[in-house]
Image (cartoon, rainbow, N blue to C red):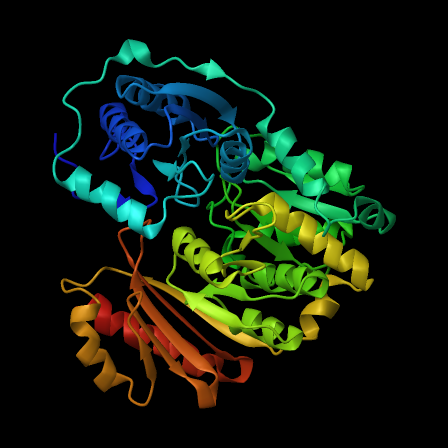
Length: 461
């Protein structure tokens, strides 16, 4: 059976539209191939599986379980839990690896599989490339027995995740509780509803909720970007809350709304979390090439090294290991803390942000105002007939005088103007992502860069 060309296949797994290019049969075969790969690596044969709240999740869990068992694996089902909860469970309890059935921030008609190694993190770029090369060589099994789709049920992963966060040296629950924060929480009816209300309660916060029920009936577009957070902004004002917090369906991304009802952008999540971490434990910081300069500013203030990696959690984690980073992540609201695990973790981000506010005694808007104001513009365009790298010469001619980094699509930087532009094919959607950032007073110039690059690359030059 061939892999549909429209399926998004990357080192971290697969994503597709349910019933169109993602079917239970394909999921079962893909899982069987992964189980075979895990056993061949010598990691063991006992894997776990978990899912977010999408309605197609239970069927795909059964299919993936059948695939893993066909490959000779034992399977434990963690149920409906956030992706970081599942990956922490792999790390803490010695599973050989795992599969999370989720399409993360993709629209509700999508689903997918995220693949984790025995380290409780997504496959490294090298492991992912090795696994994918086997898939492309036709190593999908011919048949999977559907009757094998039952697994041992293991409860409590979300609760254990909360306990690990609360035990971190960086988190002082009593100090947070003394601030008596009122938080408006938007879980978009995803897996956040099974962990975040309890976490906030344990941190002594008063909670007002939006779409906490984990039934997968997304009431807004699931990506927690400012344009999708209008209801949260309004609710923060209505409640007189200290801040608002929003996550995506599998809870590896966190976005913030300040007390004035302003969505400050998901790029601030990593910057502010890193500020708190570095105040306690200085060390290198890693973020991807599409992350705001805010994180670089925070690192410079702490006097620590700042490194950038290609986009993708696996790439960031690999770079963090290489330089011994104490904190890192991605500008989409994903925070990685090696002291916990090498995984973007929304609940962790919640605790770190609240700890920062508690320690500073300031409001969120006041902390944001301490930093240079950047304008970051994110565009989505049709993919070009030619690859981005093939158009590098065209880009160099159109955007002269820039430093160029070709590790992940094309990344251009004009240091004297404090502007950068990043153009890359998405690893999760069939689109071209074009992101640019510069000082707030240059926002018009930044928008024109995105439009010009999108037209140039999306149109094939």
